[in-house]
Amino acid sequence: MAPVIGVTATLKQDLDSVATRPLGSFVRADLDYVSGVAQAGGVPVVLPPIADVAEEVAGSIDGLLLCGGSDLDPGYYDEEPLPELDVTLPERDAFEMALIGYALERGIPVFGICRGLQILNVALGGTLYQDLPSQLGNGSIAHRQQMPKWQWTHEVEVSGGSNVAKIMEVGGLRVNSYHHQAVKDLADGLVVSARASDGVVEAVESRNLSERWLVGVQWHAEAMRDHGHEHRNLFAAHVAAAERYAIREAAA
Image (cartoon, rainbow, N blue to C red; front, side, top):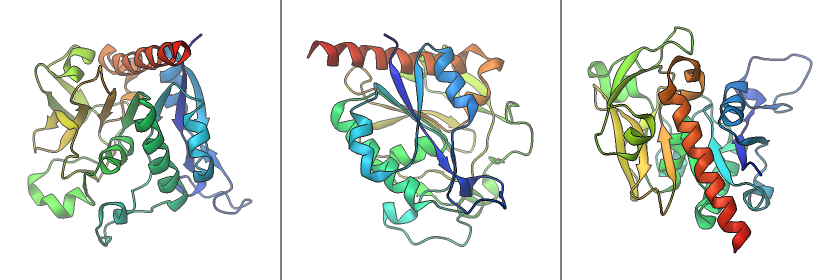
């Protein structure tokens, strides 16, 4: 059977206002994430952010896709919020932090995109730039584009010999960019796989994917799947890792 991939959802506050419903009454996962999983041969299941069921959720999935969205509460890495911090969603933060913990305990393959990379880094002990423009200053490139989401805006260099390079089959690529936060201090157990020209971390991976399959990219690969096989390859590699996990669990 195809592996089940849990796809994290965002809350209503991330979206445009709907006057007929109170805030927090909707959850949603962007169709691009769900389609990326299905295209790669996985069965996507959207996960509402309810922290009380995180352990049960982890026991029902073979892979975890951490999606983009709101800023992470800097309290998770022992910092006070800067004025430039955007909206945070406590329910989502608590659910995903708990879910990542259970996924790591079980050895579930984890793929993080944008916020997903960031919260994975924090869950493992790293920190974030809360706001790149104010903290890196004029030396940083524009990481928050105003163009269509599928359109590239800057180049990244992928580390030769990294697993991300092998998965994507590239040494450099052009990516979109919809973020104002990024990895600051890298968590133990992760290595940088790609950087932008200003040094901003654009991809990370675990030190040994055969032992712990963790990959995160800062760009929105889900929106660029139709504009390069390298982005589809990320979803395919994650689903393949989830399939191997499911087979191991069934044999245990």
